[in-house]
Length: 269
Image (cartoon, rainbow, N blue to C red; front, side, top):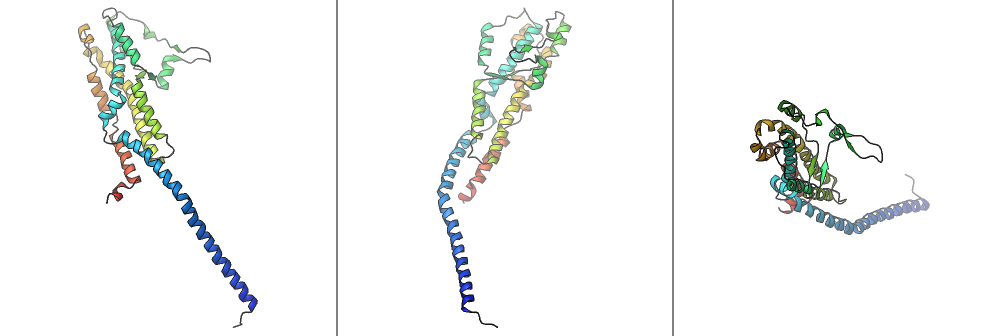
């Protein structure tokens, strides 16, 4: 074996020296980066916890009934049911039942906004150009037939096209949207909050479908003026309540995710 010369030993030493220095430099950088960004991560986590706290306040220990109270969905339902009832009176007992003008004004004042499907909008309103006013489409059945059979035939075409909602409902929906809009929340948690918003939206439009079906039963349930005046929408609310999707599972999913994300079970061990 050939003995290494002084120059060769010098080169090997230099290579080893630079490798050691480079390794120390990399390790020092990684440690410095960890030290530098650790306070930032801690502050972000604190802010995230504050946002999650708001979500817990919005969802924890709440069931469907409590959410109904917060959104005022039953009031929203009753407003739309009363609108359907007024249309029924106008169809079958026009001129025979005196409608309270005060009640109609009170009903209209409670309405904050209206939703309508694109299909129903195109079916009931004419497409317009810029600068024109929206114009309702005229239907053959829009008249006021006198014969009972014609009245019944007209009523069978009834659809609850527009769904009205209150400011209370709108505020509750906006509050959920604001919670979901936080950039500090994990994507999966945001998606679960949007699921709750979607269910609320679907349950709102479901009111129209349920009232449309309930309207078909009105002529057999309210055949006289006296029965019609005493109209109560409770039976329709029960049908709606059994048809809509509950929020309970989606809320449980949100709380379970927060528990897992914050590792609550591990902390409590």
